[in-house]
Length: 113
Image (cartoon, rainbow, N blue to C red; front, top):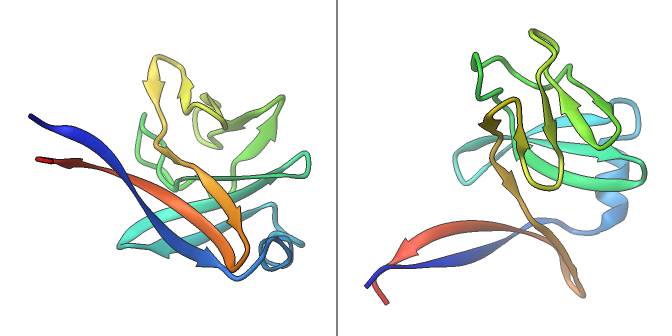
């Protein structure tokens, strides 16, 4: 039987490092585990999402954030930063967890056990 598990990967040394990265531009592109991701700071919260709009595949680096949604700069489709839901599509998002020794991102995977 398959199960979904989460692999936690250290991505930052601290929340302060994340603040520094998003200081001038609220959206900061990253490559983690071979994935093109985007660190987003919105209303003093941080979110990690796939840096690719699920509608047309455009980068979300220049996207705006409005009322808890990241809004694609191309077609103005909005996706909830917490759930990824929006416009009948789903933007992949990844949980962030602060720990004593840094900030970790969770990546789900299928397991046989």
